[in-house]
Image (cartoon, rainbow, N blue to C red; front, side):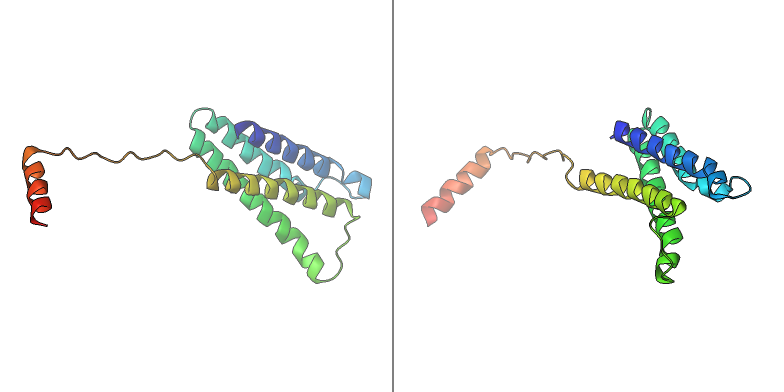
Length: 145
């Protein structure tokens, strides 16, 4: 799971970098800091991977929360345009937000499925020893009826 988290964080970093440095191609004056949101989410996931090298559960939980936040951010950026009916899937920024939402949603779904179907330890039943007193009680109960 740590390798999958690393790959997702690197993908988000790439999406964020292309989004941040691609604004001049759209005719903007310069890069906009909010375009680097996928890189920030990928950076937090990368920090989670680094922490997961020492503390596996804690690091993967940090990465899961970052992916959950990234999914929410993508939906929050795209939903108003969709509701106003000005949603254009051909727009570069929309495509990058869809990419961020897709990577984050994929990570969240894989993490939840992996958690639900995890291998659980089997608990062994404690065996009760039958003592001489218990054996006589059993024999009396059988004789009585």
